Length: 327
Image 1 (cartoon, rainbow, N blue to C red):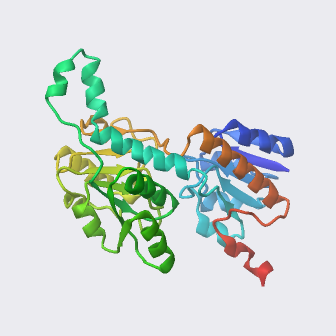
Image 2 (tube, rainbow, N blue to C red):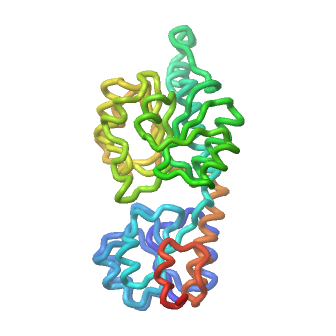
Image 3 (spheres, rainbow, N blue to C red):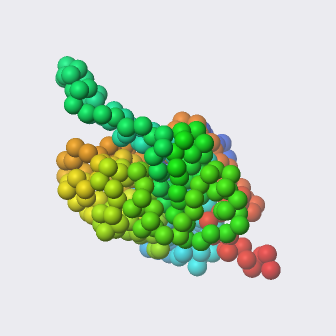
């Protein structure tokens, strides 16, 4: 069995799992022309962003039986075209729920407690900076969640039950299951995104990047936020109009933002976010705690190996590739 690994996996345990059962060809060059040269006889591919698999590569992947992302996200793989080619696309959903939720909450605390400017002034010896600003409490504030999946629900549980925040969540559809979970977590559900954006003290995004969600968060929606509100994104950079966000922050129409994900990763060295004093930036680390990275990498490796060996995968993004065998 031969596996093509594009970039490192999130934890060496996953790579060890692959190498015990397969010949692994590893490359850090994800240029399509280079990748295509490595595809001969390859049974499976595992990759992480910013590596990608597009239609051009898939057309050359004649021996590939399965492709897996290195974690949860699959926006760097053309899943639709892979499905047409009959190739299962695998991932490791929900493994990083706790890690991502904790990172989003960490950004909330850091922004509300103004940890970055306080640290910056403290190491300058400016202890009196404490007299120039107030920090803010989270208790009693309204948290607006965009999405209500497992990560958003974890954030809601901590913030509503643990911190005494009022939580409202935007969802496109409301069903009985969501209503039941919302009641358990003391969360209000809303199908009105404008309402959530306009009335919340903190907005936190928890939705995947799809054709429907691309640039869902527009400049106008951001403009409707309270001037004292904070914006947090640990989901995907592409769900936000990034130019609009930079403009909002530059104009200081909101209090600030905590950003872990970007439209282009890594961002260009001259990205305007780097020049703003009201933003806290992290390099897409929300979902890769050591615990989550180890669990997800091993799960990805085991799932990929099993699928290549003819087993039905436990975690698959396009189960329709098996519809003929099911019927």
